[in-house]
Image 1: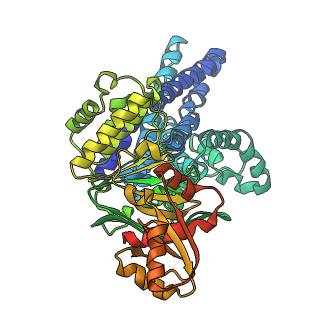
Image 2: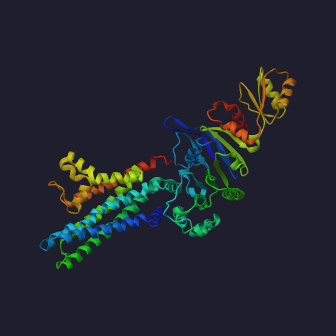
Amino acid sequence: MKSLLAAEILKLRTIRAPWLLFIAAQLIVVAGVSGLMFSGTASHLATTELPAVRHAGLVALLSLILGIMAVAGEYQHRTITDTYLASPRRGRVILAKLSVYTATGFIFGIASAATALVATAIWLAARGSSLDLASGELWRTLIGAVVWNVTFAAIGVGLGALIRNFAGAIAAALAWAALVEGIVGQFLGRFSAWLPVASGSTLVGIRTGNQALPQWAAGLILVGYAVLFGLLAVQLSVRRDVT
Amino acid sequence: MSRIVLRGLTRDFGRVRAVDDLTVDVRAGQVTAFLGPNGAGKTTTFRMLLGLIRPTAGEALIDGLRYERLPEPRRVVGAVLEATGFHPGRTGRDHLRIAGRAADLPWRRVEEMLDLVELTASADRRVADYSLGMRQRLGLAAALLADPAILILDEPANGLDPAGIAWLRALVRGLAAEGRTVLISSHLLSEVAQTVDRVIIVNAGRLRFAGSLTELGERTVSIRAVDLERLRSAIAARGYVVDPTAVSALTVRGATAEEIGRVAAEAGVALTELSESGASLEEAFLRLTSPGDGSIAPAARPAAATIR
C-alpha cells in the first residue's frame, strides 16, 4: 500500500494540471474576496467578512475536478492499463487514489482558507477596518470550507471512476452544480438541503432555504456522500473490463 | 515447461465471440509469435492473460496462477500493450519513476532502462514531444523495469521504421538469449519470422495452428479412403505423424502425395481422395487466416495434435 500511495503522489506531482488547479483556486478566492470588498460600502464592511471567506469553500468545485482526474484522467491518457498491470488488485489502487486525492483536497482547502483569510484581512485593513479573529463563526466557516474541499475531492474520485470519460465526468459535475441540483431540489422540498452542493453551502454558512440544516449535519452528509462515492469507485473499478 | 497456459479461454462482447475456446501453451525460454489478422482476438487474449478483461469462460494462467494472484506481477511479466498510453505532459523519466515506485524498484533501474532503450538523452523531455518510435521504446523500458522473466509485446513493430524494427528484433533476440519467455503478437508473419521459435496462429478468435515455423511451412497430404483405419495404421507404421482423432479424412504432415499413394497401394487400401498442399510460410499463414473460412480446421487440427 505504501508503494501505491507513493506512486499516486508521484503521478500527481509530475503533471501540471494539479498545480494549475491549485493556483486557479487561490486566484479565484482572491478575486472573490476582492470583488466583495471593492463593491462593499464602508458601513457594511464588518458584515462582508463572512461572505468573503466563504469563497474558500466555493472553490471546492476545483477540488471536485481534481478528484475526477484520479481515475478518469488515467482513462483519458490510457495510463490505467499500466497502473493495473503494476497492481492488479484494483481495490487497493482505488483506495490509494482516494487517500492521496482526499489529502490533496485537504491541502487545497487549507490553502484556500488561508488565502481567503489573508486577502480579507488585507482588504479590511486597507479600508480602515479589521478582521474579527475572535469570531467563532469565522472559524466555523473556514473549517467548513476545508471539509467541503476534502469531501468534494473524494466525491470526484468516485465520479471519475463511475463515468471514466474525463470530459463527460467534468461536464456532468458542472451541470449538476450549476443546474441539475437546483431542479432536483425542487422535487425534494425540504430534503433539498441534503443534496451535495446545498450541504456544502450550509457548511460555509450560506442559507439555501428556510429549512437549512445545522452546520455539523451538513458536514456529516457530505462525509456520507464521500464514503458512498468512494465505495462505488472501488466496486466499479474491481469489476469492469479495461479495454 | 509451459509458463503461460490458456485453457478453453473464451470471451464474448455482446453477441460477438472475440476469443473462442482457445487452448494453447507458451513454452518457457522461447520466443513465441501470436499471429492473426487484425480483429482475430489477439489483444483480447493478452488482456485476459493480464487480468484486464474477464474471460467469459476458461482461464489464462501464468506459472499456474491468474495474473491478479501473482504476488509481484511486474517481476514476473512485463507487458507492452497497444492501447497503453503515456501522459503527454510527463517526462519519460517521470513515467518510469512512477512505474518503478509502484513496483518498489530502486531508482537506478530507471536509469539502466533509459540507457537500454537509448532514451537517456531525451529522458527529461515531455512525452508529447516523443516520436512514435520513442514511445514504443519508453513502453519497452517500463515493461523491462522489474527484470521480468516473461515479456508480452502487443504489435510492438507498429509505427516503427525499418531501423526501429531491426533494433526491436535485436533486443528481442537478446532478451530470449537471456532465457526469457517472449510472447509477441503481430498481424504480419514476415515481421516476426526471423525472430521466433514458435508460432501460434489465431483467426476469428480460434486457434488455427501452434507449432514451429518448419511445421507451418510443411507439406501436408489429405486422404480419404474406404478403410480409413487400416490406412491410418499403415501410414503410422512408416513413421509419419497422423492425427489419431480424425474420422472422415486423414492429414499427414511432412509427406508427399506420391509417398502416401505408395503406402496405400502396398496396404491395399482404395483411396477416394488424395491431395497435397502447403508451400511457403506466407501461403500457409494466409490459408490459415483467410477471412470467414471456418472449414480450414482439418489443416489446423493435426498440427495442434502433433505439437502437444
